[in-house]
Amino acid sequence: RERRDLILNFAQQNSFKVFFVESVCDDPDVIAANIMEVKVSSPDYPERNRENVMEDFLKRIECYKVTYRPLDPDNYDKDLSFIKVINVGQRFLVNRVQDYIQSKIVYYLMNIHVQPRTIYLCRHGESEFNLVGKIGGDSGLSARGKQFAQALRNFLKEQEIADLKVWTSQLKRTIQTAESLGVTYEQWKILNEIDAGVCEEMTYAEIEKRYPEEFALRDQDKYLYRYPGGESYQDLVQRLEPVIMEL
Image 1: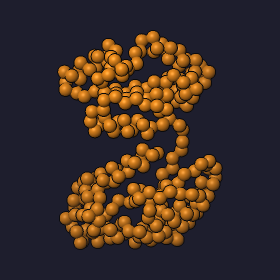
Image 2: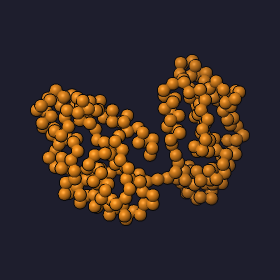
Image 3: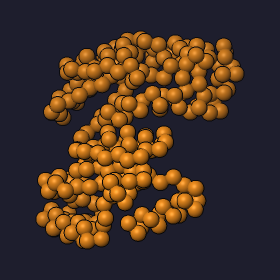
Image 4: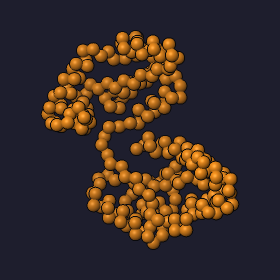
């Protein structure tokens, strides 16, 4: 508590807002699983002897218990802003969230997980528009794109992934790639490619000739540049946030 008070005093002197994040775990099974999945690969344990890691970390926890005082939402800490994460997300206690940033932190922590998983990020197979250098649009796969989709199917079969989940955009080229896999897939509109607005289905040479000012603006700042009637990469990042949280 003294250390928290020190932080609060410093924040008050410098006009900072404070939001505490506390992780509490009292379930022995959760503790053991977390140690085996996370701590064994920690730089603290280069030898990675599972029994030694378990014994050492349990000793650490006992030492922490002697000095640590959990946040008290009913009395001492009732006026603080914080989230208490209990048993790695089994339960949450949220207290006095004051602004947008704090609410985003809560949103993120309530969607986080520690279960190991493999995530593959894959482009669709080559499309007909790829062949002619056009951006956007909704063209289907080229012959070579279909070959890629089949090769991807073979690769996934070799991996023997249990409970495989496949997400695609709602564009034809991604759907055709997914259909070749022979598994159930889910379409997400927010996974669609960036909307190029008036420049959809044009080549970069055509854009430079037809919209020279826009072409120059895009070259100056590709992240913030927004196509007329379309999106910027910054817009795309914001659009993808729900997908990232779902992952």
